[in-house]
Amino acid sequence: MDDLFDCAPPLDSTEAARQDSLLAPRFYTTDFAAMDRIDVSPVRQDWDALMEEFRADINKGHFERAGSFKEAVDQLQEPLRSEFLDFLISSVTAEYSGCVLYNEIAKHVTNPDIKELMRSMARDEARHASFINHSLRDFGLAVDLGRLKREKKQTYFAPKFIFYATYLSEKIGYARYISIYRQLEAHPEFRFHPIFSWFERWCNDEFRHGEAFALLMRADPSLLAGRNRLWIRFFLVAVYATMYVRDQRRVVLHDAFGLDPQQYDFQVFDITSAITRQVFPFTLDTNHPAFRTLLASLRAVLDASEGAKRRGGLSGWLTRGWCAVQAATLFVRLYLHPVVPNRLPADIRLVPAW
Ligand SMILES: [Fe+2]
Ligand SMILES: [Fe+2]
Image 1 (cartoon, rainbow, N blue to C red):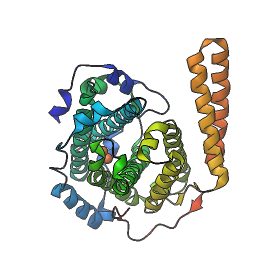
Image 2: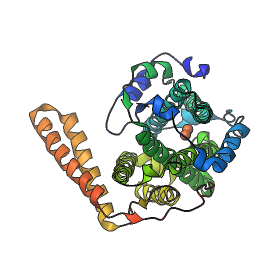
Image 3: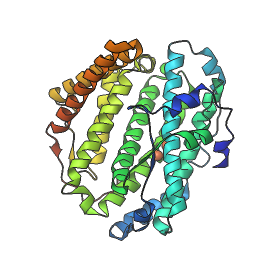
Image 4: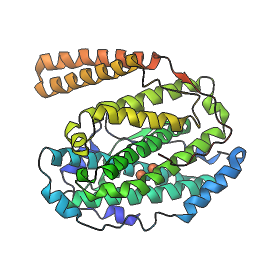
């Protein structure tokens, strides 16, 4: 992982990645002693098969650059250039956030199952982060990952919250990357940068990481029952709503893919919900018109809040306060929207078939 720390000098992209906002990817830390006590014996057979996949490391040679990365960046025009750059910065932050968390857990536990898993996933995320960082260098920018690790605030999450949040972000990450990949496979004329050709095998790594968290949760059924169902619902709403609001702001980027951001997001939700039936006792009813209306309202309120922030002054401050109240109310209404119940399958494992 040392190659992660020899990045270009700190530039504006590091500052952008360091900013903690509601929608930006975060860095996490957890209770390592509790991680050490995890027992995977209830899912041992599936676990061993999954670890064999990690050991096989089929993507070892995949993240080597070939083709005209730099030329593609040189040809990019505004405003696509800025939106693509923003996409790369938030992606590298998310990848590196996974790398740091998995690496820290691996360092602090002695449980051989958890240690090997975390090491393997940190290896993958380090590759992903440094691959994106190479593309940032083509812009004359690179996120100084070492500095980011030192300076970005870490959020403490108990292990079960790490499972819910990280499982979802791995699976939604898979759904996002594969949806873009399939769109550009069908419409190569929209592939404005070569990095998208790497997405298929790349997102299989994310899928596999998600499988590991699915097994960890299925190994302890109490994580999926009782009051924990309320937490699962909270994380589903938070992750889906965050993705939706962030994506709807990237109109130019989605346009360049030939995708409508709304359709793209609802397709990503469909794929993610289909996958999460392996572990969660319900899915969000994202195709219900009322749910969609609430998401659109939340986006409008958060956009108004951004506008007020730029405007500043007393009226801007008051508007932001009012927006915060409205956003909280909309979040609660999304949370209370009836979910679709799901009976957990006997076979836990899935293959990335989308
Ligand atoms: Fe990754
Ligand atoms: Fe991952």
